[in-house]
Image (cartoon, rainbow, N blue to C red; front, side):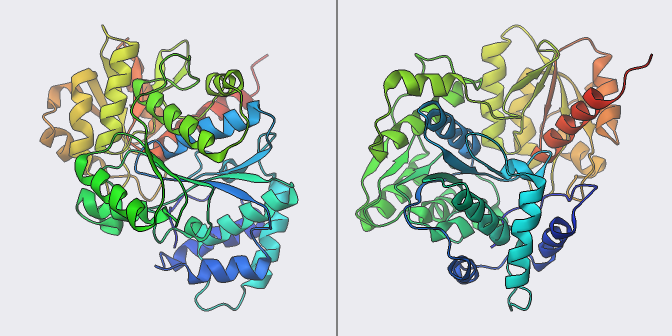
Length: 415
C-alpha cells in the first residue's frame, strides 16, 4: 500500500528517479506484495526488534523521542518515518546518521532488479520500507522504530510483529482512505495490534478508545493507557502536546524491558530533535509547524499560547489537497492577527481561491488576508507586519521553507 505522495526532488539519481516513478502504481490494499518483497530479500533479519507506531497526530514526534532515548542509552536503533521534508534520506536513519545517496542508489538497484517483472508491481512505500530494512540489517541494528505511513491495518509496515505497539492521538484525517467516522479511523489504526503484544496509547476521544480497547481484548494484548504527560523534564520539542508524546515514548520503552536508567531517558527527551514541530528560526521571529489537520491545529494553537501568551501571529498558510482546510483554519483564528494564504511547489498545493473559500468559511476577515502564489512571496508579505510569523498547513510547505533556508545558507556571500 502506498502511503504518501511526496514530490520528487529536482535532481534524481537513476534508481531514485525509478522509485518516484512507482508512485504511478497508486495505492494497493493488502499486504501480500509487501510480504513477498520482504521474503525474497530475506527481510527483516533474525533478531530485529521493532517499536511500531500508528496514529493521526504525534507519530513522528513519539518516534523521535523513542529514538533519541535509545541513542542516549547507547542502543544503535534504526528510525523509519515518512514523509520526508527536504531529502528522501530523512526517512531512513540510525542513531549515527542518515542513509547516504550512494546507499540509496545501490539498495534500490537490487530491489529494482528483483521486482522488474512483478505484477502487481511494488509501490513507492513498499520499496522504501524494503530499502530501509535492508539498510538497517547491513548496519547491524537490533532495534527499529517504525512509523506507519497511512492507517495501520493495511499499512506496509504492518507485516512486522513488534515488541510494543504505540497508538498516538487519533483524529479526523485521510477520511477517503480510512473512513468517515472516528471509530472507522481508529479501527484502521488499531490494526497494528498483535496477539499478546503490549499496546501503549494515551488520551483519546471515547469513541476511539473503545475501539482500541476492543481490539486489544480480542488479541489478548496488554493495554497501557498513559494518563499523565511528561512535565518534569525540559523536552527537546516545544508545546504542551509534546509532553503526551514523550509520555507515550517513555511508557513504550519501559514495556520493552530494556535497562534504561531514568537519567539516560531524561537526557534523550531533552536532546530530541524533530523538524517542523513548533520549530523556531531567526531568534524566534518565525515558527514552523507541520500542522495540517484540525487536531494538529488545536495542538499548535495551545503551543503558541503557551510560548507567546500576549502575541498574535501573522499566519502563512498553505494547504495540501484532500484536507478539511476550514476546520484546520478555525482554531488558528484565535492566535492570528493577519494571514497570508500561499501556494507551494507541489501538485498537491491547494489553489488560492479554494484556500480563500475555506478561510472565509472559518470566519476569517478578507481585510486581514493577503495572498501569494509562492512561499518566498508570502514570507515577504508577512515580514512587513512586524509580528511573529507562523508557517503551517502542510508538511510539504514546511519542507519547502526548510529547503529555502538551506539554499540561503549555501549561497556565496558577496565580496
